[in-house]
Length: 234
Ligand code: APR
Image (tube, rainbow, N blue to C red; front, top):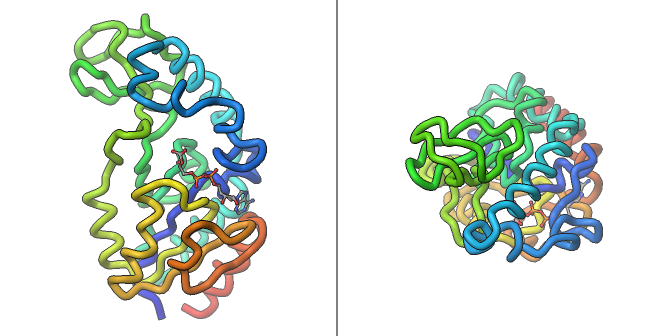
């Protein structure tokens, strides 16, 4: 029987909530260049364009509702008695929160926050942020950046996540392409520490070899079914 469980989620867990992924055919990176909206250089070169991108994404993400895959995690967290269930998400949407999930670690940041490049304060950014928005900490304008980890920046909460990966006995990846480091090493790390690893995706991915088991299909269908079986066994 498993002890602690880590669920690593990617954009695919939110796809059935109507949120585009990044690398599928209709993905965000097919319609926007990463260099234009997801790097520090882009933010320094044209902050207005970066703010426009995330202000637009924010509106779409705030309208989205959790799907059965998100809701199944709450069911697991409420019913699992053999250890803790943690959610390590690459997603900046708040669908895990809206579904009532707990123990959520946003390693790529979250869409409803901004961080001040002058004083470092993290502030609420549920509304639109522009270069005129003043930082609630230092009062300066043109210093707020979406609290989203841009390519080349350090991930958030990694010390805590490293401890989770060392301790967990089951790592479940749901809807991630395995395209981005270091999240694409988490299954290998967990396995090294003795965990079983399972991948839920529409198809095999570039790091499928790190997983003991593969469940192919739409996460909104396959993941709740797996959670029910897991709870029945535990
Ligand atoms: N059910 C299960 N898997 C799905 C579904 C679904 N309904 N729809 C899509 N997928 C899978 C795709 O097959 C793909 O493997 O979800 C994955 C989405 O991959 P990406 O678009 O690359 O998203 P993700 O893995 O989260 O990207 C990681 O890259 O650009 C950065 O910061 C960004 O957090 C993001 C990171």
